[in-house]
Length: 180
Length: 194
Image 1 (cartoon, each protein chain N blue to C red):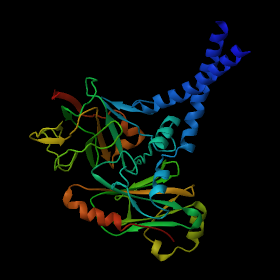
Image 2 (tube, chains in turn red, cyan):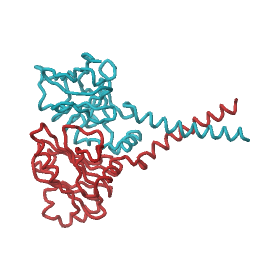
Image 3 (cartoon, each protein chain N blue to C red):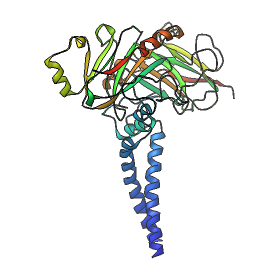
Image 4 (spheres, each protein chain N blue to C red):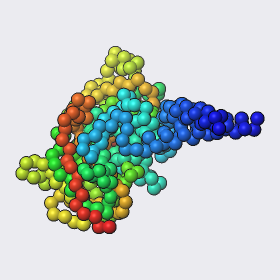
């Protein structure tokens, strides 16, 4: 009896250790995170609409039905990534996420020049290179320096009512997410 | 000898099983470390940021959530009404009171898996501040239910437990200091059509 209690006590202490280990390992081993889900439906630098269901299940969960969203994955080892688009919608916001889905930078239309969506994601080393000789097409761009190589960009646009749907659709479908 | 190995197997089973089960239980609950509650509403201001606690990080990875950034907005979720009773989509609720400052806000209902509920009719199952009718004192009163209501009506359909999600966009409350002393609307149950 005493040995049974002893085994149970050791088991409980082990459960505490297992709890911490599993908790810290979930982010590295999850196959259901946003990155994996996006990788299943599209390659890097391809813009994917998150509000449209692909294969019956939403790509990313917990989305506001009053919003349309578009996302693309990027890899900075091949060059800087520029996300730009011309067009006006009532409200848009953009976020840069790292591979594990953590939001590392976000801004909205009031922060941007003339309210236009135009930003460049790059690493600090690429920023130093670019500063030496700033290309003229980047004059009005917002530069987002990130310490990561791989990540996700998400652009969200507000749809106040049905009559705005075509405009917002055009805005999101016209987004470029290309390596420069 | 056999007894000894049985005890070792028992200890290992309790350790692995208990550890996995407790992580699952904590991740499924709406409350948790890093939660900020105002009345029935709960928000996770740090979720999806590098400052998030390990529980929030695990939740983000497991659910595939892409959380709103601080410059984008902040989401509040309610799974109970103001008296502490679970929200059900077959009941009618009144969401009333004043709201914190934001450029605009949206209100919609989801199921427990955070998938937005459909209204089942030709009406959006969401509501936002640009289309809402306000009271004389600038507060709001929204009726949530399956049957049409005069004034502000958020159409929801279906049966079962639901969450109400109130999201503020481009708001100062998304910063860490902005959350102290804000006022959120009450959720009052009107009736149930069970």
